[in-house]
Every structure is written in C-alpha cells, then in structure tokens.
Image 1: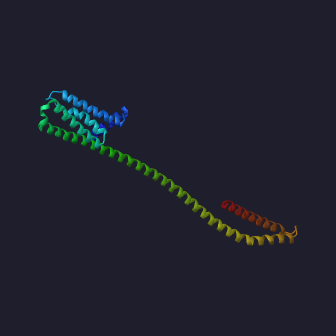
Image 2: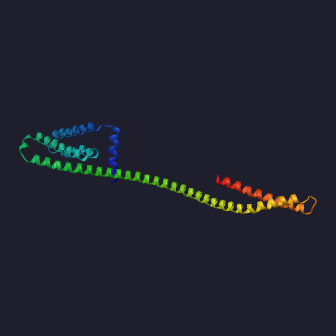
Length: 234
C-alpha cells in the first residue's frame, strides 16, 4: 500500500504539472498505443513486445476510470493483433494469432483493471478519511461551542442564584426595617414631645437630647439601608 500511495501521488502530481485536459490526455493514450503497435510491427518476431503495451496501460490505469481502462485494454489487444497479423500475413487464417491476441486481452484487462480498482479504492479511502477528519473537526468545534455555552449557562445560573439570594436578603431586611421603623417612629415622636415638655435647665434634658439623637441616627441607618436596597434592585 505505501508503494501504491507513492505511485498515485506521483501520477497525480505529474498530471497537475502538465495540466493536460482529459480529452487531450485520452488522445495521447491512443497515439501512444498506436506507436507501440508500430514498434511491435517493425520489431522482429522473436522480440517480446507485450511489456511495451503495459507501459501505456499502467499510467492509464492510474489516471483513468475502470471503463476507460477496459476500453484501452481492448484497443491495445486489437493493435497487438493487427501488428501480429500484418507482420505475418499468412497467419491470418490460423487460430493462433487470435488466441494469442485474446490471451493478451485477458492479461491487459486483468492488470489495468486491478490497478484501476486499487487506485479507486485507495482514493475512496483517502476521501473517507478526509470526510472523517472534517466531521471530527466539526464535532470538536461543536463540543467547544457547547462547553462555552455550558460555562455561560453556569455563569448565568450563578448570577440568578446570587440575585435570588439578594432578593431574599433584601426582603428580610425590608421586613426587619419595617418592624424597627414602627416603634422607632413612636419613640421619635415621644422624644420630641418630651423635649418640648422638658426645660433646658432640668437635669433630664441632656438625656432626652441624647435619646433623640440616637433615634435620629437609627432613622438615618434605616434610610441608608432602604437606599442601598433600592440601588441593588435597580
């Protein structure tokens, strides 16, 4: 398989560098096979010419689909038969050249189709690996987005819990301040009434003033609590 991958990469790089269109490339294969047939016709009868046909059929198998490989194999066998008969016209009436051409056809089809099927399967495997890699990358991106959404949801949940806790605390503070304000208003009223009724020279006057001041301080504290609660709620 490593050798097959190297061969596939080599032919694909060669095709990209040459930049030959599919139609021109297929015309070239036909001319190449005809050239091999001419060489086969001119070569001596004892010269083994079949490997030269494979020099064309093997690149075809790497670059063309299976159907085209079968067609070129048939063409190569036909050219081989023609060169064989033309070089020895007297054998045209014998069965031997037909049988030899048929054997060459079987070998050409077997070799080219095997290579074409291996190349096609390898390309499908590479495409499947690429698709799998893209799907894996897409899944990883979705997982990262999901993790980010979960972190954001957790943050919002924590904020909501914090707001609910503050709302409960604020409600408790409001209830407490309300309960404190009722007697405090009454104490403030009585302290002011007592200040009006007590003379400045009496000994109790400073004590009543201090009580009124402390009540005022407590009212200021309660006012600050109310303003703080309004600010947090707003």
